Image: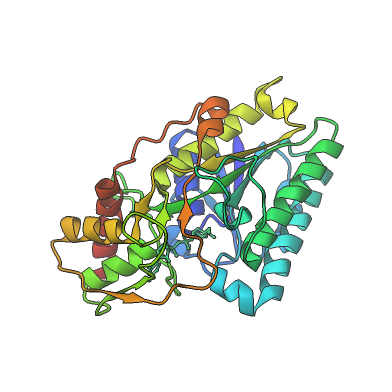
Length: 336
Ligand code: UFG
């Protein structure tokens, strides 16, 4: 197939593009390189540099596109609170322009990067797709709005467009480059995610890690998250594209739009993550308990039963030390 990956110069998008290439597909990456990196676009993919809203019509209008994997987004929870316009325009308005282009050029498949942030503070754990969606930050609200928009476009398309929204939990780890290809991992100018921050301590780039609260109602008092390896995440996108190509599949029953959580189904606390990083790096990694971070839920763990049943997805990199080891190999490789 010929597939377009928006945000294919970013962390998740570049790994998805690599997996699609490895599976034998032709890949076109759309990325404005505002947060992504030109050298993260996998060799073999064609890069169209530009804003998704500006170039989607041209790329899809050229014809022959079988599907789009839409990863391009603004994704900093904290920033979304202070610069909402960047998120409503950058995420929602851009995605509507993409949906219009999909409809105009009759592209039949869409896989969308959605997020656990659409649920907000969960009432039950693990979180299923039927859980209430009450996002507690603007980032999550924009992703939920896009999920709703996709549902209505798919339903109104009379079978011309089918879509899967994948709600990622905590994506982590890195894709090991094969045959001299560069490894692909997290390279954010502003890093907010736990594992890369802890590894920065081991690399000597920061003195300690702040633990945001040790008074949560969890076994060790720190927040619990569901860490999913980026290679497992990318595989789910391939399976979603396969499903969208099958006539009479579950997605048709779901009105043309299937929502699936993606997580390992196992939660790890912040202290457990830091311990794993100590084991993997051999560094003592000083940690200091700090106040809770605004907007953090205590526990976020996915039920991925639907992804397993409908997509046939089975994560294979579920061991926390293994996820950290891959992130460490990537971080260390970039630091040397
Ligand atoms: N944490 C710390 N110290 C840090 C950074 C993080 O203790 O310096 C803690 C957080 O409080 C949280 C856990 O580590 O409990 C994980 O934090 P991350 O920032 O790595 O990830 P989040 O769980 O906040 O965010 C993830 C995704 C977001 C998504 C969100 C859903 O990365 O994109 O889940 O709530 F929006």
